Structure formats: C-alpha cells, structure tokens
Image (cartoon, rainbow, N blue to C red):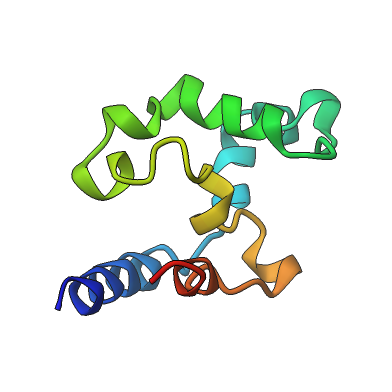
Length: 98
C-alpha cells in the first residue's frame, strides 16, 4: 500500500515538473556552476550531491520519505537532473530495494 502511495505521489510530482528539467531550473539560477564544479559533472557526482544539500538541506532534514533514505542514497538516485538527455527512469531506483 505504501509503495503504491509513494509511486502515485512521485508520479504527480513528476507530472508537474515535466515542463522543465531540474537542470533547466537550476541553470536559470546560476548556470551549470550552480550544481557542477567548473560547469562540468564530477566523476562520482559527490560535488553535485553536496550542492543539493547546501541549498535544500540533507535527507535527514527533509520529510519522512527523504529521511528514511538518509545514508543509503543520494539525490541523484531519484531526482534525474537531465531527464531529456539521459533517458533515465528515476523510478528504477526504487525497484532495487522495494
């Protein structure tokens, strides 16, 4: 039941955010450097995860769904920044544990 609710809530959020990717929204604020050091992705995306936490707080500081994943996942595991380029399915991350 909880998994179905989580997927439904996540799907609604994705539908509202479909107009612009996360990367597009953040680039409007400060260019690629708002997330990437020197405008280029780091090899392990650790810098990018630190940038997420610097602005949005750590997973432990967020709602229950985020806090439950603290220490197990990073923002990029669920929030695919460049949807239009990567073709990645954010929901696929859930399937590895749930």
